[in-house]
Length: 144
Image (tube, rainbow, N blue to C red; front, side, top):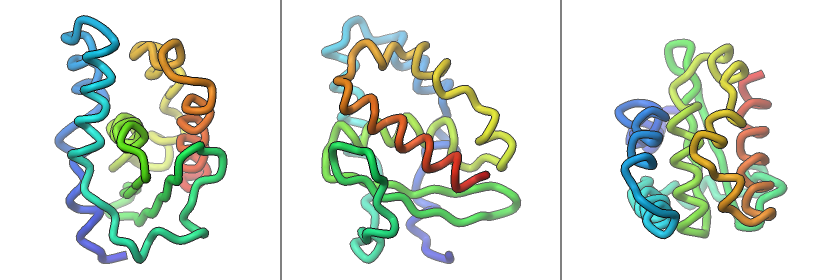
């Protein structure tokens, strides 16, 4: 895919999972963290509508979520979108860890540990948590 949309996504490039962790540690409470997650979602470049198709839709998410990808220099580049701002923010968190990575880096990355460090599982509804895991599962499936 030669779409420049994927090149516009900073998560996994200039913004990585360590940056997300540092920002979370700086914030005092979960109200501030939720605002931070929503702000991340606002900054995620919008996916062109032509990719909002059933084949790109992730099953298992409460909100609509789409994923596209290509490979570039042995790395996977992902683009994701959702119809929910908080989910768009969660997408940014996932992409910060898995975007612009090799197959081995993606399949070996411990997302459960990353989410535990962020304490996400204790602050998301069960449906949102399941959707988050569905996103990760789809990305790891693509890379495998």
